[in-house]
Image (tube, rainbow, N blue to C red; front, top):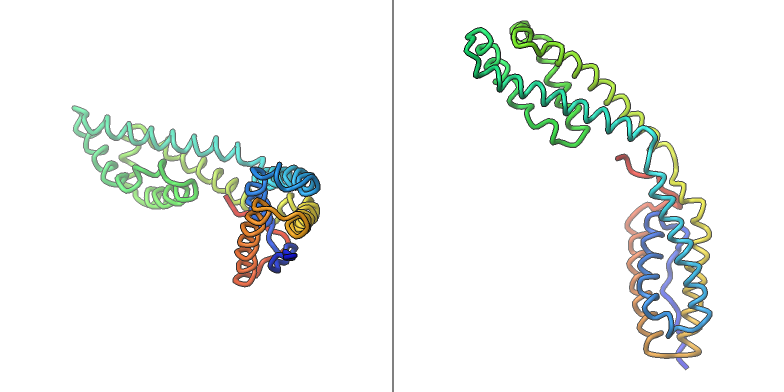
Length: 245
């Protein structure tokens, strides 16, 4: 009788995200074979699916921050102010008043590198606005031109809003960087469920052999080898800090 034994894998040393991915892939392999793998493996599989799904939901929840809504609103305000600057410059560039037309054309040349700032990632947009305003505030001709076509206040509002968005963005990233993934509270349960499922598949494949069990075993073993290699190539830790968004 052939005895099935999985390749070594220290599941406890996987990061939260890698553990979730391993368990999810394993479940996806096993679910279509549920009726063919036996009652005990099927029962353990049910627990693994439920607990891994719960851990995944906690991981996703931990990436959210109460500051996100404020950042989104602030970003939208910056976009609106940039849009107002752009529209005013375009409109005044066609003015019959030569003074206003000249002022708008001067600002148009200055504003050109920043026209698509609103389309950039928020951290890039913040940096572009800072760069634009630092040049604007030290150039008297530009400030006079903005006064002439009526957007000096818009630049001031943009300056204030951008600083507020930047502060919120940095605070959110700091919060996320300092906390561990809340899914870590379920990690021991998922580790235990995964190990029990592997043990159940080993026993079932060894004592009640079938093509379905052999195929599932081989696929799961290939996956374990992949994550074992991952541990060997990185300094994995039992818990993760979620990435900054």
